[in-house]
Length: 91
Image 1: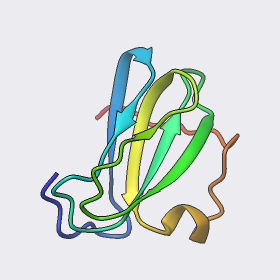
Image 2: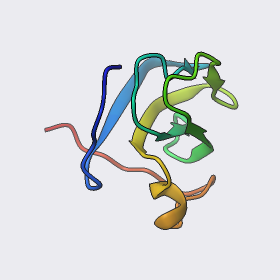
Image 3: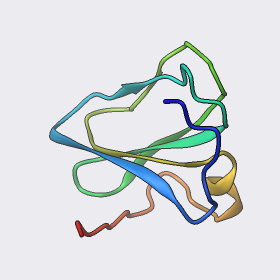
Image 4: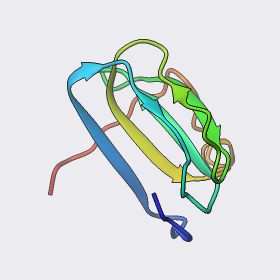
């Protein structure tokens, strides 16, 4: 929340431990975001375009192991689609 900018090579990841159905909204978020729901096995279940300040929740399809938010439109621009595999390392 309260984001008004996000560099194109940055994002925010929200691990879901334990995995669960995830629901996000865009309240007080001032930029569009792509919300990428990631299954516990690391594959993308669904991608939703978040509209600034929208109060309507967007949901994962099935339990999520994590949720990744990136700049709006970057998923499509980079060819990221459901079924792709996501890997990240904790610092």
